Image 1 (tube, rainbow, N blue to C red):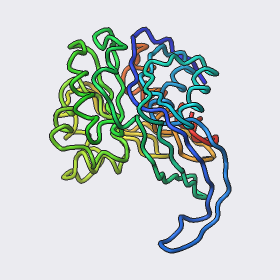
Image 2: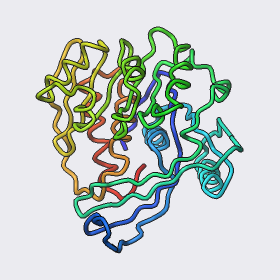
Image 3: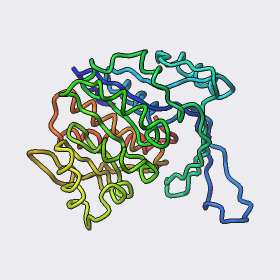
Image 4: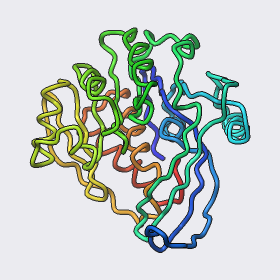
Length: 295
């Protein structure tokens, strides 16, 4: 991947889980007994994927993701050691979560997730880092669901005023408490979402362009809406428009959105404008979509 010389400090908040990737002809219907081909078992999770891609791009960062105690945690711990990832949170009250990812012929993926300690955030976990030093902070909607959301947002109140929070909405965005969602969609937040997530964030908007305007009016920060192989749409204070995607033979879409976030952060922190950063992010996402499984 093309490198980006980022000169800003980035904190990635989220999860590392175990991905079990299964290729299927079609998703099973209720009561059906379907078969699939096991593709691989690997460490994944949005924050983990963002971290791995940022490392590949040369983007310095810290990954704040809990590692528990148990079978899945041991696999994740070994993976962190293999890739030289610092273990910032070690928690012995439970194991990490895991998921089965069903990959259809189109490359589209559907997840069944069994959550672990990554959904049980504690205020004390933030004692490991100084939130105030970071210029960019990534957080996924997965971690903001349920009781963890208020814990994370309380910790983020310590970030410096000119920092940017990249909110990666996630497919679980509609399960996030509405008051908490209103709190995070405020000035200083860069919203990153796909079309389905866009509909949850701006339900009254009748187009991608109108949704971006609605969200930008709340955050006064860049809004980036990914559109699969069509690329993405962005809106910032000076510019807006569609940025075409890169042509690629899709293996699967696992981690493509995470890679897009990583590319966006790296390019923005290197001084690129939003349009240029979106173009770079499209290229990074295409590379990940062209291979099997996450980062």
